[in-house]
Amino acid sequence: MQSLENTFLVAMPNMPDPRFKHAVTYICEHNEEGAMGLVINQPTNITIGELLDQIEIDNDKLADAASFAVLSGGPVHTDRGFVLHSTKPGYSSSVNITSDIMITTSKDVLTELTTKQAPEHFLITLGYAGWDPGQLEKELLENTWLTVPADPNIIFNTPAHMRWEKAINSLGIDIAKLTQYSGNA
Image 1 (cartoon, rainbow, N blue to C red):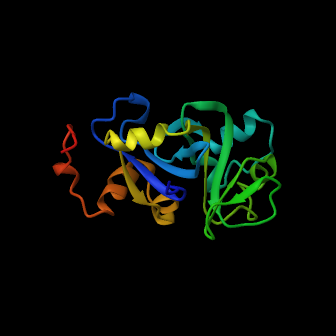
Image 2: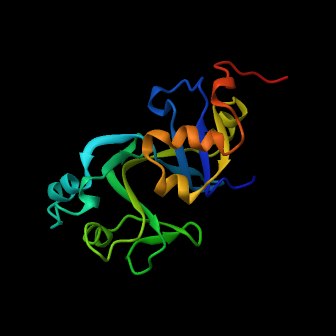
């Protein structure tokens, strides 16, 4: 099995699960025990400043980051937050995914998000997408997802509403030519 860690899963137009319609999911972990990823293009109606207020973390309401939308990272454990960010060591629960991207689940990163000490680039998701062993491979065989090499520029510098199109375009595919139907020959 080839790991899809540090890959985008891009939902095909025929995605049967409405929670993943036009989703771009960044795969953080993929091994024989299954897979875990964060949907990076589904904003919620909660801002980072509002989230920090809800969990009683002081924050600078005037900082640009306070107005960023928190993303719906997937349908699993929607009460848990994840911070996907550019490399900045020192957080208690940080894991390097690549030399450019880390994931952190500890509260210490949250205290810095609206300060000058924040990672250069970051996004917050509530929840994640998870697959049992073999489940993701089955979905790939059913043509539910396209796999696309992950690009930090799409994660951190592309507006959320444009990430699906940008990820597909990175393969040289014209979205207008993607069909709603699929099959295997």
